[in-house]
Length: 476
Image (cartoon, rainbow, N blue to C red; front, side, top):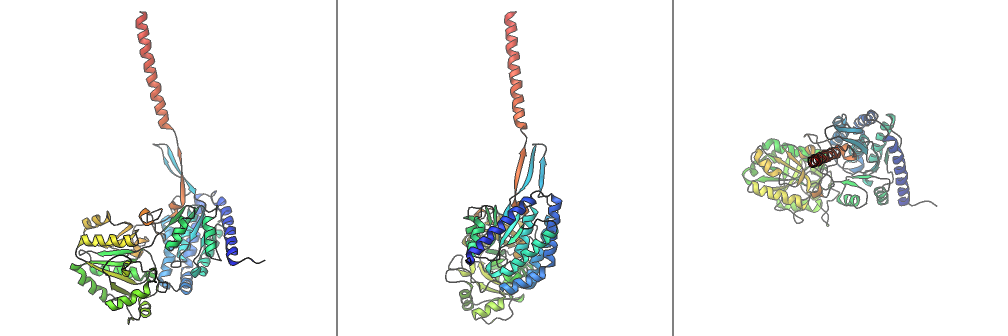
């Protein structure tokens, strides 16, 4: 009897996890040099296949553009490799001779890698590399809408790794992606950690699976342009960020906050650099196609260029880089205060710095807590004031948020999974890297106990000497 698709997908997951578990037992015996040889080969293959995978991802999903997806693939391979090349992740990591404690790296085991449709190939390259760098195997669950390109990316990573000495089965990918398959993967007893990148429902499922998980929440980062900022550069940064891969990076700006003192100058610069500020009627038309009746983002606008989105909304725009809509508040009744994974921005005008700070916090409390905030300013005291209040894990200064948040234009670790911390419902606030995918075994000597024993012995000797002296005095 032929099994149904759901049953076949569950069996496929079981087979992939078994193979990954066997491969991981071999991986955990390999030294740092052997592991690094494998990861370097993967990085080189990812870079070599960057254009091909970008083309396939765009064709299959309809999201983003080939040029920027190529950049993402190279970032996930070559830039990541440069960051982790000299990172020690195998064996004894540190020896504290003063306190007599060693830190020993322990691979977490088999990782379940959940892959989003917005970054279907770069996420595979990146997660495969950070898992293998820590000595762990990984099994991917691709999004059904990006199945072919994710499977191919995983295959290229596996083949490159195996040519460099990696055991077969260390990198696997589900070919029949169903909800049953995802459930089987996340709850399989031999899966040790879930690395979840995707929608809110998927992340919640990961955390409720019973398997340890690192999940990331939604991005909805506001950008504040303070009156001290370089307006021309700030606008250029935001446009570059918001148009990068047609706005599919979750760290990208979702709204801009201006002070009334510089609002007119910023708006003029936005128009000068190719944005279209919509009137009230156009904003209402656009809002209707951005979100579905239940308030969730409409998939038809994700990763599409501004002109195509405008056409869907019935707005006569042909050459705008970004569509900008004025908004008055934050919350479910204010559509432009929510995340929009496309070249659309909300525009807020406030009276002063205090109001800007309060509004930024309200926007993030509505959606995006723990993720990303960006500010364009030269006043360091103001930056300090905001830094201790805004509830995010990435606070970016004078940089395109999409690129700064992932570590491409900042000193942050280069990553495509961005933790949101406890405030954002995530188990980590890091840009996730190999060190997040290893456990630390600590070897410790009992030198404090020895000192305590020595002190006790000394005290006892002193007491015995005192008693002996008193006895001698009595005898004499």
